[in-house]
Length: 345
Image (cartoon, rainbow, N blue to C red; front, side, top):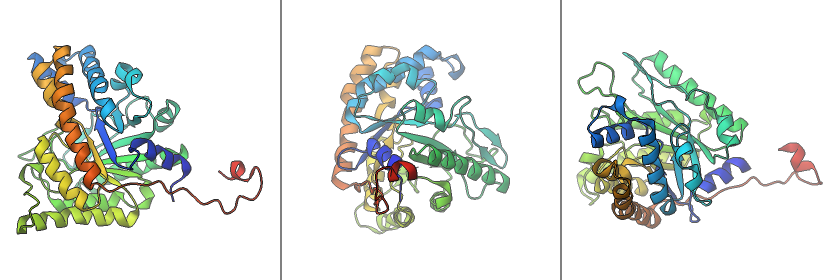
């Protein structure tokens, strides 16, 4: 049973019907790359002011159309915390985007000078962590990743704030398809995704909401038409749904920068398996930045037209087919006298 704090935090992330319609703008390397491409410069030449300006545009134009937004502390908060609507939930990322890349796998760490305690103190509604994970990585690397996730879960329990865990498969250093970019790993297998979910759905990690990638590449996912290929694909999504359902953990889909129509197809399969929404970023807003930055007026116009249109389609699909989450508060059968609750909580 989730605590009052975790229930109320999750409720802040969802809309009034219990659907998670969330926009991610904590991306750092993907946004650096988009700005660099738009300006015709290298990633290292991207200036802080440009990143902040882009994030402010994203919040200003997209926040009214989603149930919550995912911010990072170093760019998004200084750029646009004043623009976030009161009813829009605030998810704060904790992980550093610079990972330690080793031949045996990736090791994650928290952003310097940032913590669960600070996220709670600033009024965050949830803590989000991206953990790069492969069940077939070096055992020492996987132990590091499991400890990293577990310790943050303990901090979230201590500060009574929801824990949103994002899992991503990645290519090994030195492999033919290796990249450090935040893109769907071309060599991923459904089993790697499913077994990762199975591991981190265990109670010891304290996860309250899972942000997951499609177990099959979004670009090659078949139409959900009842054919043999669709039925086979649905089994992979159902395996994830079964794990999350057994543990009582709601789950949402990340977009991974997939084309909007491809991501909608992912959601069709996921919703049939019990997913409750999305936490998507680049699929919604990347095109506006790539095509128009640094012309801020043009970026804003593109977001209001095309970005909001994509978001509306995702919202409509989620409302029609996504699972509804409902808070389940503890029953206080032991509260008999004034002061019992304050003393026990």
